[in-house]
Image 1 (tube, protein in one colour):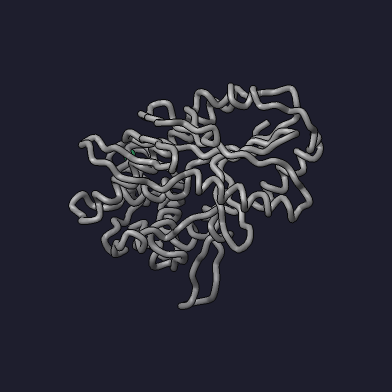
Image 2 (cartoon, rainbow, N blue to C red; image 1 turned 90 degrees about the vertical axis):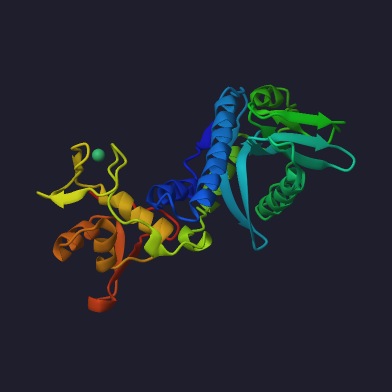
Length: 326
Ligand SMILES: [Zn+2]
């Protein structure tokens, strides 16, 4: 049973917004586009994995959680997917590279071969998986759970892989091979019964923390003044919807709506800074009327802090997107 589904990663969401709002001639545009493509490919690989793991429906109790962020021993660790069965837990790392990957054994080496033939050593994902196994083991240990933890590395099937001298400790496979792998897992010993699996899955959900690196303008060395303001039409994707007759109007495609500024507010928090004043809201939505702005802000799921000149809005819960309020 799937306890946690995968959603659009916050980094990808922010990069999509940044790309829309950064002028084509901006010197950071290339970098943003490049990372957007990497992020999108990585997410697509994970979605492909999710489709395959969906075929794994054993008779025994089990739990699957996608995209978990946990904290242990003062460190954060992210797990692409976690599969819990009565006798073991598996951490799955999903990769999707556009380039060819060569994996060598003794010593383990990961090399990316780019289209122009250039070769570059990459970080060994097994070391990363081992670190996650270690941290998860401690996380479970604190809760009195002792169970074997395994790790597998999977690649989306579109990847070109060359595994030279495979060794048994390397569990590397394509995403389509994953259901077969899990079906072949022996479930001899029942360390966790159905009730314990249910409790563990819920404890993991409870301790999962959304993680993001907002605002990302800073991260990319982009001056917020270079980010184009305006409400983006959700239908034709054009910037510059205008407020009139109590709704947002797109002059390009004729679409109208009352809530289009919410995405603009979300963009501000993802890209620019973690607070927003009424003036900043008017600038970023290109709205003239202060009172209309106040009304719209009040319905944006934000929290008002301070009074008069010091008044500003923040997100209700740190790291989470604004929850729409009707
Ligand atoms: Zn439009």
